[in-house]
Image (cartoon, rainbow, N blue to C red; front, side, top):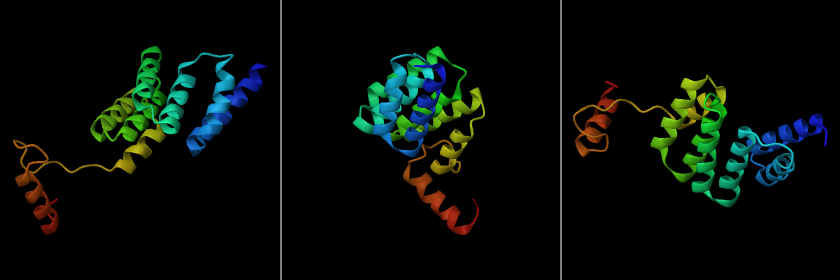
Length: 147
């Protein structure tokens, strides 16, 4: 297979994964895997593994390996954050997205952060965010218009 054909298959696989066509993405990326071994390819395959088969832990580990191989590529942080979001761990997801922003400004990470929404600061910093007093005061201050 020529390099141009591989690039085309890779692009089709990435587009399919971004649009949510996981099975198609796996087929395209699987064909590229036979000829190439890149961290970007492994990250997208990990995303497909998590999204398609629900194997979130192994997919997250694959993304972490890609980050070790290419620590300055924010794409890996984007995909790892998406995988962690599937697991329901919003705190770790936010940490990974913020690390990705530090590595390089990626508009897809910024979009993901906007979807998650920003949290307002706690009212009483000496108490945890989920403490009943902080929650009650936060709601009260929102109602009054102080925050």
